[in-house]
Length: 79
Image (cartoon, rainbow, N blue to C red; front, side):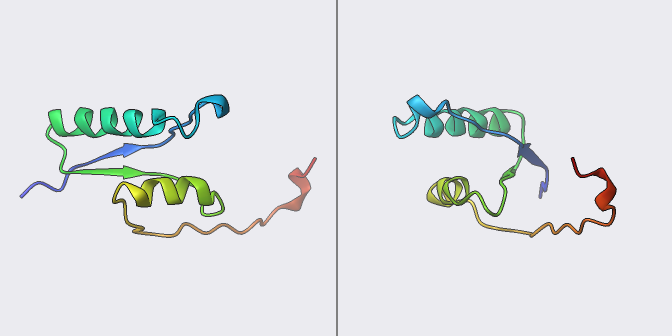
């Protein structure tokens, strides 16, 4: 049983092309790419606050696996 996973780190559609099916076509291409290379899973990264992205992936059957959390420990780097 394979447990290999491919990771879709960034999927961005130019704003003027959104809601035209482009994202779905790109996601389908990523699924085909992963499948054709023997991966069992395709994972996608999206910021929790990016509700449009998380809803997009959920629409295509992605499920949330983990939540990454961050704490700023050095405020001196602020601009």
